[in-house]
Image (cartoon, rainbow, N blue to C red):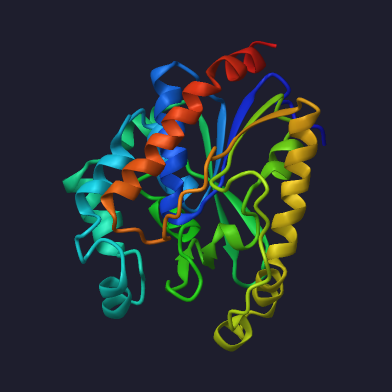
Length: 285
């Protein structure tokens, strides 16, 4: 059935853990320049940082990451050893959002933007694009989107088990095309020319109970590179606009260096400013 979204705009946000602060910089600059959207598809960090666009909280993502980068209960080895999750559930999805740097749940829920968090279903191995309509009660879907294999517990949400959406649909451009959006802005966290190589993580050893997930994970690099080809095709023909880091910054998945965190965020800001006219012209067509 044809989707009635031809007049609508969508942002597609890649993940990449702390590289996702690049996207946070882009999104903050979008807000400052009144560039909006009808929908967002966020994957992993793209979802976790992208929610601040829908709640209109400029600067929130970079602020709390700088403030709590060295907090042992935020993210890192201590959390992994003590809880099984490299991203601490209690700190990130309770204390942080409700007390330390409060997320505006009401603004999120009242925003007209449709927000989708991409997750990977452990049983089917397929991507699910979960619409977040009640942020308070859908935090587990957001947590699942960013729960990286091997360093995260499985996340149960509405009777199913999930992990990182990047395993099954790391850049959901095809989903946006299938939904028929007229304008698509893709925000990547890797530089132009990047290609993913086969990894040799022991998916079967750790996730043998979930053969469909293992199959998806083992061919992730192939699917990712095919999506990059699709992105390049539609970028060249003007169907989509792509923002990607203009230079390669070495940022670890769980980066603790504050200067590096500031730099990747600022690169997102600077790249967005450099492309503002192109983006505005594209959206005005």
